[in-house]
Amino acid sequence: DVCEGCGDCGVQSNCVSIVPFETELGRKRAIDQSSCNKDYSCVKGFCPSFVTIEGAKVRKSASVSLDIGDLAEPVVPGIAGATHNIVIAGVGGAGVITIGAVLAMAAHLEGKGASMMEMAGLAQKGGAVHVHCRLGKTPGDISSVRVSVGECDTLIGGDLVVSAGAKTIGLMATGRTKAVVNAHEIVTGEFTRNTEFRIPSEDLTMSLKARVQDNLTLFDVTKLSEVVMGDAIYGNMILLGASWQKGHVPLGRAAIEEAIALNGAAVEDNLRAFQVGRWLAENTEAAEGVITSDVVAKPKSLKEKIDFCAEHLTDYQSARLAARYRRLVDKVEGDDLKGAVAKGYHKLLAYKDEYEVARLLSATRSKAEAAFEGDLKLTYNLAPPLLSRKGPDGRPLKRAFGAWVERLWPHLAKLKRLRGTPFDPFGYTAERRMERRLIKEYERDIKAMLKTPPANHAAALALAELPLKIRGFGPVKLKNAQDAEKTRETLKAALNTAPRSEDAA
Image 1: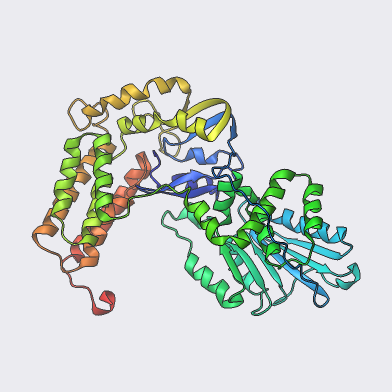
Image 2: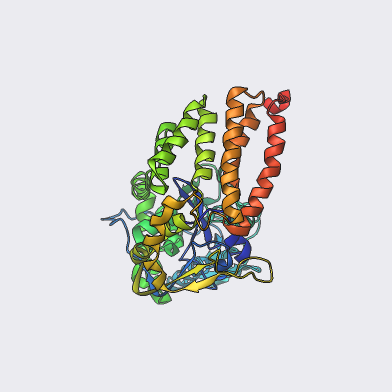
């Protein structure tokens, strides 16, 4: 909850284990514990939300108990032609190579020929990985290791971006390739540099459909793995199970399961994941219900969103602040502009000062105990404004504070009544003065638009939502505010300039 979604943690670490996390208050950041390599460089991000937990182990209990029951045995296809060519596409650290090894071993157990080639390039965790696996009736049937252009018979796609990339698409052929692909949006390196980055999922899906047409199965197996297995790491094994159940893999189930056992890593869980994949192939609608049942409902209608923001402001400060919020929002006409003001105004009013951070951090230990098990030792990484000296880069240096500070959070949070008054000791910092100024400027801008409706509606919407770009803490927020001020002047100048016809179109 403390996170502002500013992305400074990604800038400092360049780590793709920092993933987007959608909330009622917008997109924030979270750490994917399944892929995190524990170098802790993300903690350098100027943000009080980072808590280091020692002596902990991630709780991997599934949130949904899935009764798979008996599954029909599919017709296992034979190997048509010299070889059956399987491509496994995904990201490093997610078990892509393990799937290839399991297939090669299963083929060996059945007396078939198998070759496997890893194409990871410079990939590490999170980088694109391809495994080419050729299966032949006999070892002598395999003359080359690499799958050539248009030769892929089966695609097991652990990542949508990699699977729909030109390198993978080129290996597939319409009418030949059958694909089972993970629809989950796994972040790329671009997300660490661009806070607004969105994966073009629709375009990627269209590219896959254009190539394999009706031979495409797309499902969020990452979410299914998290919900059913308690860990996203089993997503690729679920894909293998689904692909096998659909008759895309010319190997017997007994051989695949024995190969999983011989691999020796989390055998029972991987066997279970393989079964979950088989179940998914025959129960896609039920699987959709499983993953959506684990999603927390968010406000949908405009009224619900406004009510939510007003309730949040009451908890943040008081009913008086919530009433101030409603007075301005209620004056705005038109759902699109009203919605923009509802978000932008709330963002400015609910600035995260020391009192709010303390209020939000009060729930940290209970959340940590729900997510981790063991003898937890919590360390808070903070840069208190009145205590921190500046580093070589001009930023205040973060310091580690032990669990003793947890006793201070409730007392500091209660002092929120001082917020905005002359008695607020933190209110005299440059950041707090800026936040109060931004609120007044925004109110003037919106009231001016209400008095004289702008000719450029797009500029009005952009101006109303501009506060959403002022994210972060300390130097990060100050920099974003400076950038937003330049944009504000441009948008204000454009308000009464009618857009060109091509822009309006």
